[in-house]
Length: 410
Ligand code: HEM
Image (cartoon, rainbow, N blue to C red; front, side, top):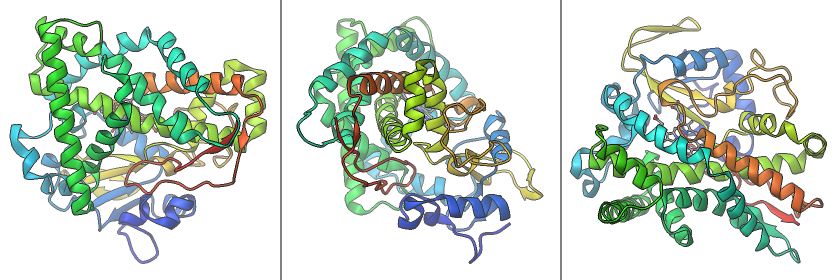
C-alpha cells in the first residue's frame, strides 16, 4: 500500500517529529493494523510494522543492505551516499561492516566478532570498576541528571577501556561520535555536515595513530587483538581495521546510553517492576530484554530486497528498500500479550531491537552486560532513588530513541 494523507510517512515516522517523539504508538499502531507494509514515498522505502514480517526480512540472509544495491528512489539510503562530503570520499568510502555486502561482510565480521566477544567475556569486573567509580562521584545533595552523569559516560568509558584508548578523553570521543553519526541523517544542515566531517576526520586520525602505536609496541587491548588477527593471516585491510574500530567506539556508546537511560526511566516509573527485580535479582536478564522491547534505543533497520517478495499481499521488487520499525514490531499484539505493558516477567519472546540475521548487532552482549551492571549497582547503592521531576523529553533524532534528561534524587 502507498502512504497517503491518512498515514504519516517520512520524517513523521522519526524522532525528529515532535508528535511522534512524544508518543509514537498511535501512529505505529494505525500503520500496523491498517497498512502494515507502507510504501513511504518521502524516503523511498517500504515501512513495515508487523513482527513476523520484520523478523522474516531481517533473518533472510539473502537480503542486501547497501545503497549500492538499492534503487535510486531509496532516498533513506541514497541520500547518505549522495551527500557524502568530498573531504571524506577519498579511500573509496567507508569500510565498516554495517555498510558491507557479502562476500566482504562474511570475510570481515567473523574476526572482529571473535576478538570483541573474547574481550567482552572477561570484562565484567572492569565494567563494575568503571560503574562503581562513576557512582562514587555522584552528588547526593542535589538532583543529578543521570543521562549526563551516568548513562553517557559508562558506555563510552567501557568501550574506550576495552579498545585500550585513553578513557579520560571520553568527552571528546562522545563529541566525535555524535558528529560521525550525522552521516546517517539525510536531512543534515550545512553546520551538521561540518560537524560530521570534523568528527570523521578526527576519528580517522586518532585510530591511525593508535594502530601505528601498537604496531610499534604491542598493547593488551582489543585494537591489538584485531591487528594480531591480521598478522596471523586473517584477510582484513588496514582501512577495514580502522573503520571498524571507529564503528565499535561510535556504535558502542550512543546506543547503550539510551538502553541504560530508558531502563532507569522505566523502573522508576514502574516501581512494582523494580520491586519484582529487587525481590528476585535473577530476573535481570529478562528485565533488560523487556526494556529493549518496550523502549528500543534504535528505531529500526533497513534491508534491500534481493528478489521479488510479497508481504501482506504487497509486492516488493529487487532493489527496493525495507525499513523495519522496532517501535511497532516490538508491540505487535500478534507477537506479545498486552504489548503496551512493561512487564519483566512476561513470557520470553525475542524482540527485534538488535536487528537480525547476518547484520545483527555485534555489540549486543556488551550492551547487555553494561545494562546489567548499571541496573544492579545503581538500585543496590541508592534504594531511595526517585525522579526529581516528570520531564520525559525524548531527544530529536533520525534513528535513536533516548531521553534528553533523567533528573533524580539519589
Ligand atoms: C543497546 C545498545 C545497542 C543497540 C540497541 C544496537 C542496535 C543495533 C542495530 C539495530 C543494528 C542493525 C542490525 C541489523 O540491521 O540487523 C546494529 C548493528 C551494529 N551494532 Fe549495535 N546496538 C547496540 C550496541 C552496540 C555496541 C555496544 C556495539 C559495539 C561495541 C555495536 C556495534 C554494532 C555494529 C558494528 C553493527 C553492524 C553489524 C553488521 O552490520 O554486521 N552496537 N546495532
